[in-house]
Length: 285
Image (tube, rainbow, N blue to C red; front, side, top):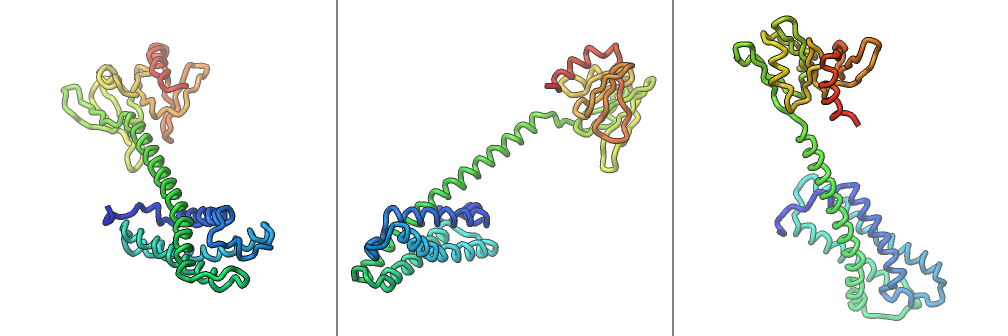
């Protein structure tokens, strides 16, 4: 476990900033509510407002240790992997460095406070500094982990929903049953027939391409439109409903505009109107 690499969200720049800000806020509340280090006894005659301003200045000055540490950590992470034991040691160094800062301040700055042994001050500073850092670090770690898992679950759900859409290859055979071309359903636009031939229109790297195939539209209607968004809308057309951008009713009937440029409007004839609208109902809200 300790040899494993820590999650990237622990040292990302934006999360480091959030960690520093939250830790600073936590420390301000901690020192003013809990009043560690015997700090309230340093100036017993000072009002609460002045004490808050004074203690805030001390806390923010001490937080420079965390700021510098996180800057170094972010820069270090770009060159090498940070393992769990590296991170634990890093935090321990932050606690010790900040405890030394508060120990020196408590020992030499207050002039009217109670004289205490420096080892006792350091022991108390080490304990309180550990609380000031470890508690907000644990909270932010849990928060970042929750955000990471939530984002991952959302991504998985999006991929699951995307996978429910058909992404099959549509195989086109000629009248003899020989395979002539296969087109990804998501690239297929429409099929147009003329006599015993059908022209397949599809997307490729260069735009819209077409392929002429000797087979009837009736065969394609019977074999290709089941369980797919393909639907026959006219005696000369089968259209991919996934590619329909606009369904427009005009004087002569209904026409379909596709979401690809340079394609003609596809008519919906009276003969196929009912079956077309039945499939269309699955695509409308």
